Length: 241
Image (cartoon, rainbow, N blue to C red; front, top):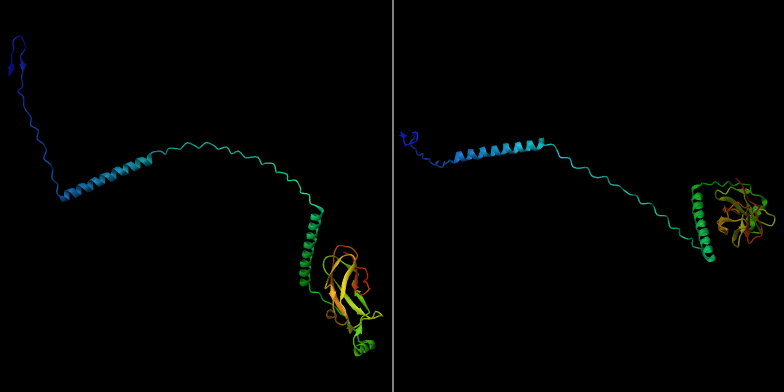
């Protein structure tokens, strides 16, 4: 239909139409449909999480900035403090020297005791046929000791204990096999310095008028031994390699 107005061209007019939009009705799902819908949503969620993880793995790692170098300063060693030496008095020095001598003696005694226990020494004795004088001495009883004789090899090495033999003799210097010893015998070094073991001899130490004694020289001085209270002295014992 044309609408005509004066002084204007005719304009076609289309009759208007009214569209009615219907609202969708809510869908009501049963139990099986709801279960299927939940399973489908879970699968889609898992697929999305897998895609996110794959994207994270493909992303290049971000490098952390390198730590700055640390400069270590070494402290110079401090100069040692010089402690002045303490001067000791004469009595203190004497006490210190005395203590050192005692410690040295104890050390030598321990070493010598170990050496004597380790070494097996064999004493060779010479057996002689009894003479008429010996028989008469045994029959007549013990004889009085008139003198002492000290027998040794005449030298020492300085590396350990030296062995010597002390003999009981009569006026003529003959050995008394059945002596009557009424007093003890004290061994001393009247020249040089030495230690004796035993240092005191009694009648129980003698067998057949002889006793074995061990001597430890101190130093390298010639040693002369005396058996007090008898005046007899031994021959000199010199140091030798």
